[in-house]
Image 1: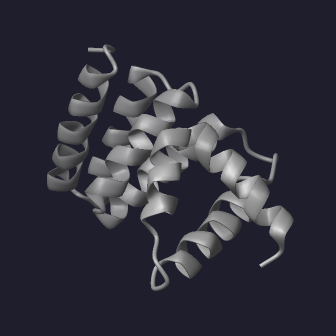
Image 2: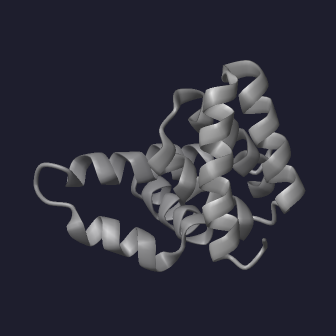
Length: 126
């Protein structure tokens, strides 16, 4: 991987998910998982989030919708926190949960609302 994509990715990843969270994940990487952590940082965060065509707020809302559709609730919760960091409002997160419920089913929407409530309460927004 091109080193500048990794560095850009690291910057974008920390800006959205928080430096402490990212550094903890990277520090926990071992010989088995480190190549994935590095590639994911370069590809997802450097190549994907490093493109300025979409702002971080829009990308966060897209991520909530896609990760919610996949039902990956641990990652959804992480990205819900990131969405708040990137300026998404409670109303926008609610709207993303509505879209998920409409297109992926009410049970999945319920899961997203459950996780969103926890994140929003933790952030002092509810």
